[in-house]
Amino acid sequence: MVQNVGKIDRLIRAIVGLIALSLIFVGPKTMWALLGLIPLGTALIGWCPPYAMLGITTCRARPGKTT
Image 1 (cartoon, rainbow, N blue to C red):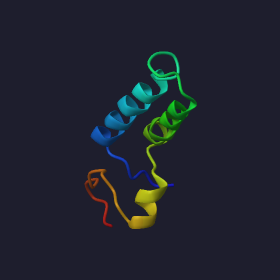
Image 2 (tube, rainbow, N blue to C red; image 1 turned 60 degrees about the horizontal axis):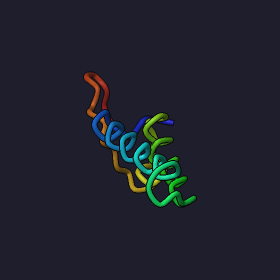
Image 3 (cartoon, rainbow, N blue to C red; image 1 turned 90 degrees about the vertical axis):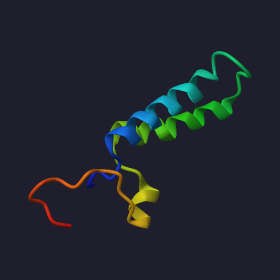
């Protein structure tokens, strides 16, 4: 798997995932908050399946590497 999620994208995904997961303990206390595992997981591994299917990448091009 080639990483297709850049640093800023990963940071935003991690924050959104943690906020969503926190809804299990505070707020409406709904199990829908477990959906926060999806952005948190993609932030941790740096790879997003929909991005891969659509050919999207938010990573910067590495010097000396051609695409």
